Image 1 (cartoon, rainbow, N blue to C red):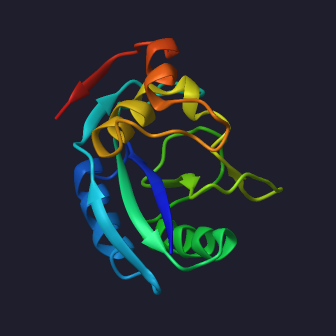
Image 2: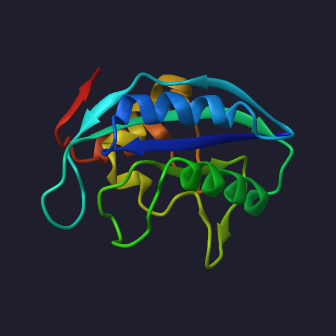
Length: 158
């Protein structure tokens, strides 16, 4: 079993409801167990055009799946929640990102772990720190160091 952290985000179709429903679906992923979830946060959108604010959180789970198998499960959950992939970083009903997958370091077309932009996103780092404040990333960086260097964009705990 690997310790996995998943970033959750939504800014369409009742975002709080989307995240709660996604967590229930994550609990049903085979050969995996949801261990916990951070608080929910409102965050400013990153991406093109005018968008509503996001609701973000981080979930922690243990999984015996391989990284691509877990990605397939997460993308299936996104699709079940009406996710459309028409504009990169555009508004979305649900976004589920594998942030960390044990000590794995992957750089594949469909999946990069650790998530390549997590160090720039306080809406990832702060919820992650709720779950694992002393976390060391596979890259050798500490979560606390990343938090200190991350821009403090508009972020508010719900």
